[in-house]
Length: 384
Image 1: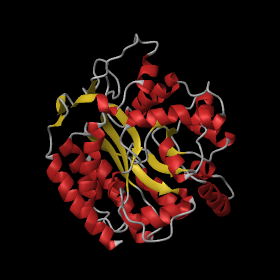
Image 2 (image 1 turned 60 degrees about the vertical axis):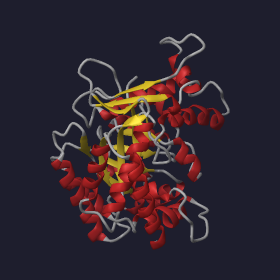
Image 3 (image 1 turned 90 degrees about the vertical axis):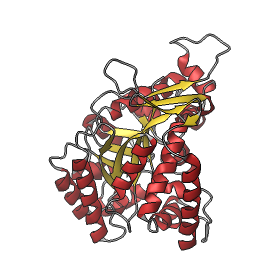
Image 4 (image 1 turned 135 degrees about the horizontal axis):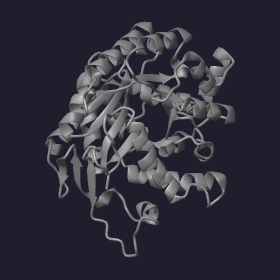
C-alpha cells in the first residue's frame, strides 16, 4: 500500500517522552506551552535537534510513515536547525517538508533569525525531491502584526505557504479578539497568511464564518485528534469541514508517528463528540489519510505521494495483515480501521529503496542512535 503521510508533527519534542515535570502540572493549554514545550525547546542544542530528528524518523518508518510535515522550534539554536533535521530525516530515509516556527515569544531578534532560517532553507531545497521547506509560524498567539507583515514580505517569490498552529485552544481565540477584534482565522486572513499552500494545524476552536473563509481561500487544515484530546482543547469541527468541501488532512502533532493509531482515534472521537455513531465513517477517515494527505503533499513535492499510480514516488509499505473476512475496495477502509495496525508493517520502501526489510531497519544503526539519544535526553533534562 502507499506509504503513509503525517501532515503535522514536531520531531523536536522527542526528548519530552518521560521528561520529569519540575513545576506544578499545567491546568490549561497556555500553561502546557509554558511549562512543557517552551521550557524544553529553549534548551535544545543542534545535536539535540539532530538526534530528535533521527529517533522520530525511525519511529515514523517503523510505523509505515514515509513522509512527514515537521514543524520545528529551538529558539536558542535556530540557525542551521532545519538542515540538521533534514540531515537526520534523509539519513534514516524519510521524506519531509520542514518549517521553523517563527515567534515573538523570545524577542524580535530570534523572530528575525527564524524568518531567515525559513527563507534560506526553502531556497536551498528548491528542486529537492526528498526534502522541501515551508514557512513556519508558531501561532497568532505569539505573533505581532509587525512580524506577520515581515513574514509575508519575506515569503514573496518563494512559491511557498505558511505552516502555523491555528485556534488550537480558546486562549488563541481570546488573544486574537483582544489584539485585533477578530477571530484567529480572520486575523490571519487579513494579514495575508491564508492560501492554497498554507497549512493550518488544529483549527479546534473555529466557527462557521472561519470555516467558510478557509474554504474560499482553499487553505489546508490538519486534524490532530490525539493531541487535541491530550491537551483538552476541544474537538475540531472536521465533520462540518467535510460538509463544506474543506478537505482536512491528518497529522499527529508529534503525539505519535503511528498514522494507523491516529486514524482509529479520528474514527472514534467524532462519534463520541457528536453522540452519533453515523458520523466519521471509516471511508471518511481514509479520505483524510490518503486522499487529503496526498493532495497536501502534492503542493510541496513534484510528484504524487500517498498513491500507487504511474509517475508517483515509489514510497510503499508492506503489511503482514491476513484478513479472515472478505476484503475488497468497498470495505477496505473498515479493514484499515478495525484490522490493520503498525505491528503488521514488515517492509518499507522510500524512493524505490528498502528502508525496512523483513522488520529490519537498513539505513542506520538503531541501537547506537537510541543510546546516544538517551544520553542527550538526560543532559537536556538536567538543564531544565
